[in-house]
Image 1 (tube, rainbow, N blue to C red):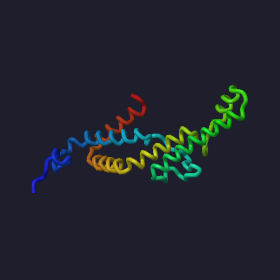
Image 2: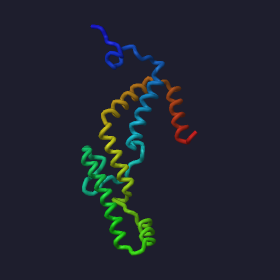
Image 3: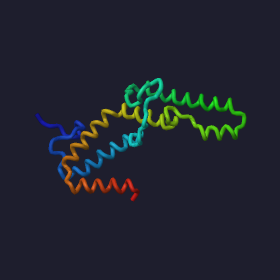
Image 4: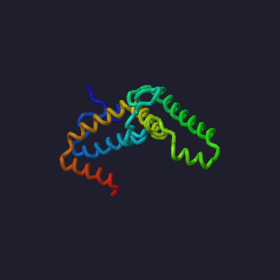
Length: 164
């Protein structure tokens, strides 16, 4: 039985990649992982308490429609808070100072932080399989990089962190 070429099947064939290509392949895979995570905020720090009243722990939810409802709930609560402040405060100056001093918070976090965290979870749920495959590929490739290549990769990350 003949092995079909990469073009015909879209799959990698035995002998297609060499050890010399490992660093370049690893770079491509890591870039895909970072791009995926960046799309949904997966590199941002999470909430210290992700227990959203009425929904439970956001990190435990895996149903996208429920997560979208959670965003709606947070935004609705914030809107209700601001409207209540507007009705209870006579002066606009006092209102602005009051909202600045006492912004809306839910379980210690602002609506913006909650929405970002929920969007992050939506991305994690949506791209879970693809991310797992990419991370497995990165781990496999990483096993075949030399110490010198690993050091070079770490120094490139270090330069990114400190902005060089």
